[in-house]
Every structure is written in C-alpha cells, then in structure tokens.
Length: 102
Image (cartoon, rainbow, N blue to C red):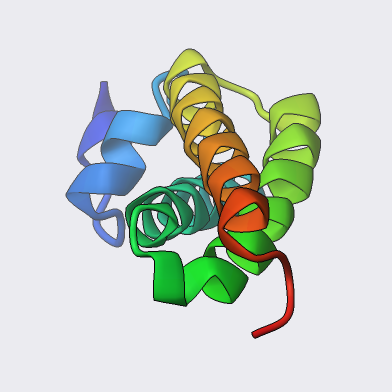
C-alpha cells in the first residue's frame, strides 16, 4: 500500500501502472500511440491535411503495434488499441484524400 502513494507519479502514470510497478517506456509508447492516433483521425477528415494524416497514421500504427507487444498492463493495452484504430482510419483516409505527399 505504501507504494501506491509514492511521490513522483502523475495521475495518468497511476492509471497506467495498475500493477503497482513503474513502466516508463511502455507508458510513453502508449501515450504517443494515442496522440498519433487522435491527430491522424482528426486530420483524416480534412482533405487538405491528407499528408499529415497519412504519415501520423503510419507512425501511430507501427508504433502502436510495437507498444502493444511490449505493454505490461491492461490500461496500456486499451490506449494502444484506441490509438491503433485511430491511426488506421487516419492512414486510410489520408491515402484516399491524396496520399503521403502534398
């Protein structure tokens, strides 16, 4: 129980480390995956931002698959799946709207 109240961990860190141990690399990978996925998803619906959606979608998809492979807790895996799906939608619509290059 004393470990649960250790200083130095933010709220997101406490949510992602549900097993009580620190996983800094896995946490960063999960957060980067979800951010790439969200940005790719949002920019996928803007036809003039197709290059951003396509590149961030590929980056988020590949990074998300690796992050899913090394993840240690269920909350990390949940963020990874949401990020992977958002990245996939972003890359597909980005390619549909014009591809990787402006």
